[in-house]
Image (cartoon, rainbow, N blue to C red; front, side):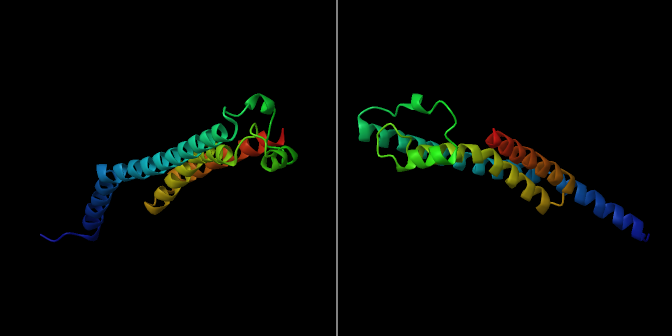
Amino acid sequence: MAYSDTDSKMNNNIKNQKRENSPDVKNRLNRYMYVVIISGLAFAVFLLIAGFFINIAGSGSPADYKNYEQSTLQPEKLSIIFNSTSASALSLFEYAGIFCLILVPVAGIICAAVFFACNKKYNLMIIAICVLAILILSAVIGFMK
């Protein structure tokens, strides 16, 4: 009994669907996301703790953050903070830790988009890129205020 081309194409399609929906493919995305998120959070926590101890070592007490209730992301305020030698200034480690915490979800979305592109799931990749665009747009609007 001979098989036609359509039968072999159907068999290949079924094999590809089984491979794409296999637990291994789904678990790989979970592993990649886990590594990105855990490593980003661990690095951010390290920076925050290092900044905390640097502030304690410099002044004997944690930094006084009440002086920075308003936005500190304006260039003139940032230059004052970074050039200041007073113990109440936010340390560069703490800023880097906060910035790293902000970047963790962005890195996760980029990881997912790359994973979807590699697995030729372009509709999911487009969704991830749209979510990334919304995050970037909200950050830009937030900095404009």
